[in-house]
Length: 287
Image 1 (spheres, rainbow, N blue to C red):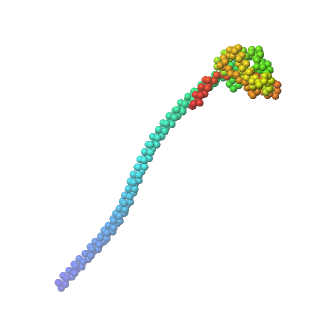
Image 2 (cartoon, helix red, strand yellow):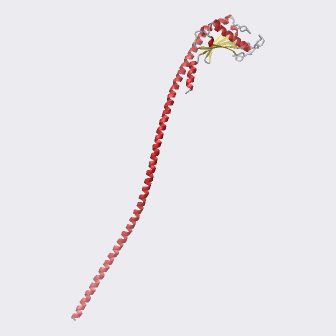
Image 3 (cartoon, rainbow, N blue to C red):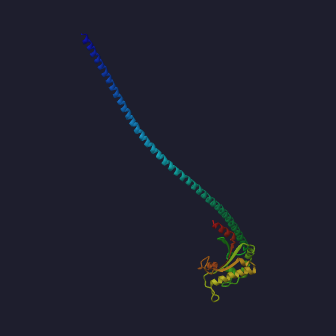
C-alpha cells in the first residue's frame, strides 16, 4: 500500500515534470520562431539598406563624375570667356581708336568745308562787287550796244558788233575803244581775276578774204580787243586769254536779223581767281 502511494507520487512528479518541460519547450520554440522572424525582418531591412546604399553610392559616383565634367566644362567656358573678353576689349579699343580717328578726320573735314564756304562767300562777294563796278563804269551805253550780267560764277560783258566793229571787220571803232577803256579801268584795279575774250559770229558765211571764215573772224576780233586792253590800256597780258568760237555758241536764233545781231558779239568773261578754293577742294577730297 505504502509502495503504491510512493509510486503514485513518483508518477505524478514525473508527469508534472514532463508537463513543465514541454511547456517550456513550446515557449522556447515560440521565442525562437519570433527571433527567426525578427532576424529575417532585420536581414530584409539590411538587404534593402545595402541595396539603397549601393544605389546611393552609384548616384554619388555619377554626381561626382558629372561634377568633375561640369567643373572641366566650367573651366573651359571660363577660359574661353576670359579669352573672348580679352579679344572684345582689344577689339573695342581698336574700334574706339578708329572712331577717334574718324572723328578727328570729320572735324578736320568740317573745318575745311567751313573754310571753303567762307572762301566761296568771299569770292561771290568779290564777284558781286566786280559786277557792280563794271555796270557803273558802262552806265552810258545802251542794252543794244552792250550788256553786263553774271552767270555760273562769272561776270560777262557782252559787246555787240555795232559797238565794236563794222560788218566783216576786225578793227575796233572809236566808241568801242571808249567802252573797252572803261572796262580796263575796272580790270586794272582787280588783282584777282582771269580775263577771257571770246569772239562770236552768226551763221551767215564770211565774204571777206579767201580762206577766211566766221571762225577766223571771231578769233581776229577777240585778239583785236585783247591788244587794245593790253597795249592801249595796260591790262596785264598774263591775265588775258583770247579765243574765237565762230558761230558755234549762239545766244539767239540765226533765223531772224535780231537774233543774228545778238549772236555777233564779243564777250569779256571775268572769272575770280579760284586758287584758294581749288586748294581747299583738293584738301577736302583727301578725306
